[in-house]
Image (cartoon, rainbow, N blue to C red):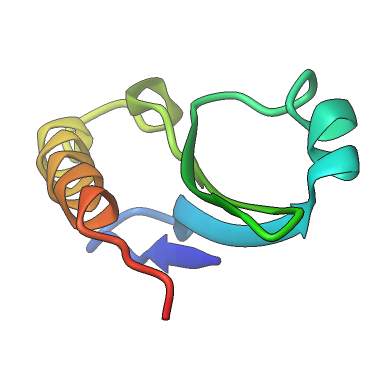
Length: 82
């Protein structure tokens, strides 16, 4: 799990996580997850990322959070499992 510590913000904020589960588990999990991206579907396993949503942060750091999330999305698009 990756989090970001904003200056002058009392809590760290969840950015994204990368997880790998059996495809049977994925069927049950996906209904409860929000804002996910499947990174790999191979060998009976699903590798996915759950990504923070912009509305997780309000106030003066909101634009900084939005910019970071855009970079996270680009990073995740380049994911390759080796």
